[in-house]
Length: 606
Ligand code: F6R
Figure 1: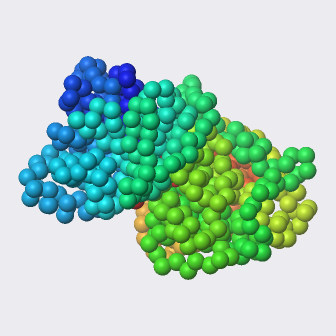
Figure 2: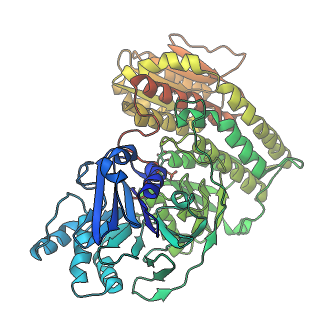
Figure 3: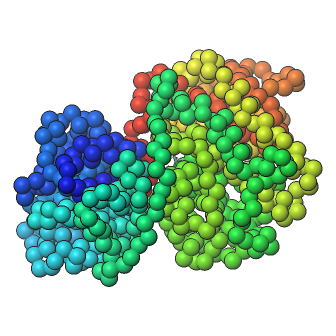
């Protein structure tokens, strides 16, 4: 996942590269580095840990050079230390890389045989030596072409050369890469966001393309080295402000922003005056679609699973859900009347993108539910439904999850309406309830003190379980994922009805178990499953919605009640206490909430 940046300018570049790297830190934060060219030499400075560490390194302050590349790393090959940090350089060439070179072992063997000396444990270093080797006999463009041809796997690359004071090469296969145009300077970056403070004029490289960036112009080539022309896009020049305000962490702020996320989504997709849905431009006729496959990773996969319950409830469509990393390698039966929906906050997740690419190559109908509208997944999907939740900084997804499930719910209503599966009156009632949702989420957000109290039990336990049935099952999975990624304790989400088929053996005296049992069609069944874990010694935190009906159960350890609404919308409210549980558990442990260990916000390697 790693972030890369390159600047070719007539002014010194190191400070600007550092600033851009800070913006790219969401892609990886275990080490960072920079290389510039000055007085005919490549200078490199690298540090373990965050960009802040790199910035504090006195050598960076004194770094000269008007051309340079920088990198933030999420380790794939080799420990996250300063030796393995990028850039990697030979005497002649310096490279930053995002991706994985799958044939690096073979290439390394070949290069060692040709006398090349390796310093790091990374796969990237083979690229440096391969270019260096090819430069012995080829010019720059041909050496790049030859090198890229020899690489298996995925890459976005930024490359500078000792003997080329006005040239950065960028290349892309699999991992995203953008170039930017400035006044007598040009740029390379993993995304437009990293370039935004410098320019809003952007071109995205497609798979297989490479480019040569000079100060005053940029040339593009396809895989076989033929020159190509590419469009320059003008993005909005407004820079979003990112600050935590009065919050300790972005995650806390993003949790509290969720009523606004919902309001924005409803404003965009609901026609208030007519109680109707504002999705008019679907590019397919209703009889062209008889099934839907929803695809995502992690939290986005949970959104897909949530949507399955809604699509099945509200439409007569067949609905499948898939994890992108599984889908992309399975033998899929592509059917002409299937719609494939890709769900992703970043729009850059490598597995989700590969699944989309596969569907596109097979001529399938594709739709993206994304937050970043300039992303690869948005650009390459036939139809895009943005979630409009603003930038999400916390690595653990919160407001993007609620944004995704909101859009998917509205899409289910729309398809139900178009296909005649939903009566007008029913649709109108559902839209009415939906409009009330932001207020209910806002009220539910005030449950802090109770959650703070129970969070200690969860972060001190060996492990915990999150149980739910029906609409609550995907939310149980999401709650467990949030707790494990932030608190580093084992947590498992499970369908409550499945416990007796194995996992019940895990329950022992005092084990904390979250049971999601809102008063929906599954309520009684879930309460029975709850009794079964209580009988075996579990400490149950029951999360339900407010009701005048008493809960008929004994020995519940703690109960949290969220607001009440119709059964479709209860998952939105149940999510809130689970996000807060994960947040407070990690807070009490003193962990880095916005940047949990081993993770990154944008997962651009498979
Ligand atoms: C967990 C989380 C991840 C992402 C996953 C997909 O809190 O954020 O599981 O949901 O990496 O990312 P996107 O949505 O960017 O495709």
